Length: 107
Image 1 (cartoon, rainbow, N blue to C red):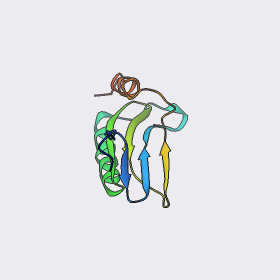
Image 2 (tube, rainbow, N blue to C red):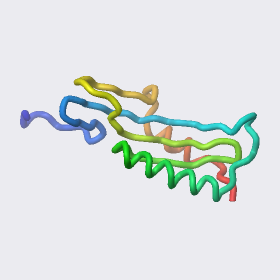
Image 3 (cartoon, helix red, strand yellow):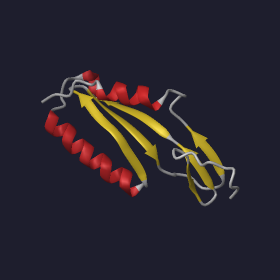
């Protein structure tokens, strides 16, 4: 590795793969019904953390409201072969985090 190269801590490498995947997922209840409770969101977060751990991804943010759940995932290599993949539409991560943090989570 060249001494002039300063690695970006957000870019991950695994063998022949280089990636910087930040995914913002929104799961909505059917007909946007207000069905989610705080207890349900807590359990949903536990499940998502377990799934992310299995896929070597990181659940950075998790929150929701009565009719949807929002997640911000980072990482996870779900492919083979050498290439680079990036996502999140170019939005700064600070904007995505702020958007998720401002959800009005039910009690």
